[in-house]
Length: 234
Image 1 (tube, rainbow, N blue to C red):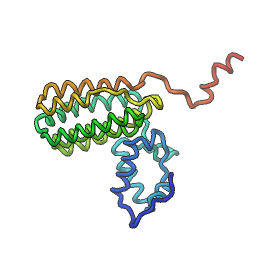
Image 2 (image 1 turned 45 degrees about the vertical axis):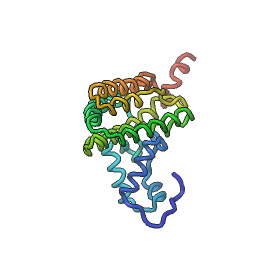
Image 3 (image 1 turned 180 degrees about the vertical axis):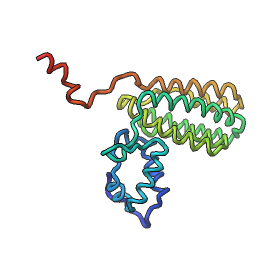
Image 4 (image 1 turned 90 degrees about the horizontal axis):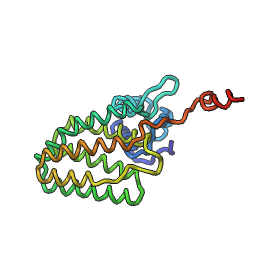
């Protein structure tokens, strides 16, 4: 953890929650990172009671897990969990994008265009974490346009879980492949084309899921498993 933050007043539980949540979205906190209460207390200058409340909220969002003898860690979704996350997003965002297409104003389209433009710029610059954050912002902005706060909150949680999946299953330095799906979505939504908007969104999320290396076995952390064949061959 970093040194204690400089501030003029003690931060609130909600503010600390937002900082940790945003760090997960931006991949500054990666899967399996340990979140010790003591370090978080030192960083934010608050009591363990407040930190425990923050960690509880994050665990309800499925981005933090409490593990026996390890305490709280950033969630590291398994392949089957990632598939369920994307299936949930397809179901949820089908309704969101349809409603956004019905309600989108020229001003809304301008905001979406600005987000997509900055996302492309970060991709070209190789700033993958910033590009992923803006991609999440794009989808959340669609939920804002749709105007349903409970759906937006559900999507916010799923976007954070998606960021963890990307951090775990996309090779370091490669990022997510660039495409023009967001630009095509803006065009369809701006025209009020509900059917086309839904079709683009479904194919977009499916393509994102397929870029993840979910079927590639991870290296074992068990020394006996790593060296089993070598020892047996002696």
